[in-house]
Every structure is written in structure tokens, then in C-alpha cells.
Length: 113
Length: 115
Image (tube, rainbow over the protein chains, first blue to last red):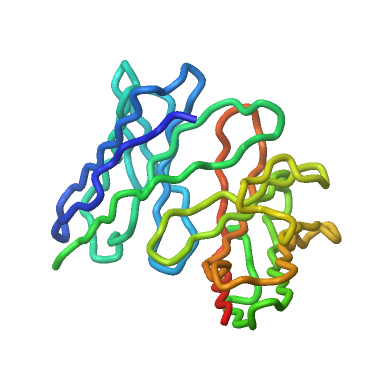
């Protein structure tokens, strides 16, 4: 599984757009990029997943450049409730039934009033 | 929207006691997982389960741990003789399967405290 690198923490203010970038230089051809969000004392929650270019859903956008060695999670107009830890995970087709997720420390986002 | 549920939300136990953590995965999912997260640390994979057997386990998942899917809905994690260092949040997750990196849906967790 490809290793990922994210900033440890970020600060923002309500109403701003937040972009969190993740580096994954060793991403393999069949690897997808997935982002999860975790609030304190809660389970991680799936945000978005993509393979290339841009993916958008009701919560966020995911930008993946052509070389796929990085990705950027974009949260539009954040609110206080977006304060959480955001994890970038990379993985792909599984051999057999090996589908575990390997987690890093994530990016701790603090949204200020 | 279907969700993964876990019980109990909190469990306090004495060192050496057995605990069983319970999970009800999303009903049409095929893959089931247990993860744990020690306070302030990252989420760690424990075990994955498919087709009524363990498909992979980590080095944390030693002989003190076992998993079971006793019926069509529940998925349990048993710790036979708890140790202080087993204190953590335990998360169950399930996934629908598929060829590519799947989305895993996590439960709210059980906070286990071993005294």
C-alpha cells in the first residue's frame, strides 16, 4: 500500500474554502485515493474517493493531477462543525480478500469563528 | 441511510477478564473489519473477515483475540484475557466488496477501558 504524507494540522475560519493536500509519490496504477473524516471519539466517515482528475459530491471535491502523485481535498465554505481529522488513504485492487485500510495520523483541521 | 452499529458504547473491565464487543454491519455488505484506536494515536487494523473466515489479521490480533459472525447479522470481537494496553476505541467496519479499493463504513465505536 502506498504511503501518504499530509500536513499534521491546519487552521481556517468559518466560510473559507479549505484545501488539504496529500502526497502519495508511490501510488500504483490501480490505486484509488480515498478521504475519511473523523470527529473525536467517533468512527471515521467516508468523504470522497477518486482515481484521476476531479470528483465532486455534496460534501467535498477531490482534485487529482495527471501524475496522481498527490491529491487535494477541497472543503467549500467550512463551518465550525467541519473541525475534525481528515485522512488520505491510497489503495487498489486487492489480492484475494485483503482489503485492510492503513491509516496515517491525518490532518487535524481547526475551523475558527 | 443504513449504518453500522456497535454495542456497548463504553465498557469498563478488570485486567484478565473477557470482553465481547458487538457489531451489526450494514446488511448487504460482505466484508467486515475490526480496527482500534488508542487515545491520540492513529487507527490500527486488527482483522478482516469474509465468507465466514478471517482473511487477514495484524500482529496485534494475537491468540487473545477472536472474531465470530454467529448469525446473519452480528459480528463480534472477543478479547479473552484483557490487558491494560487493550484500552482503546474499537471500531467495526463493513464494506460491500468489489474489485477496487472499497469504501468501508465505520460504526461509532466501543470505548474499552481495562483497569
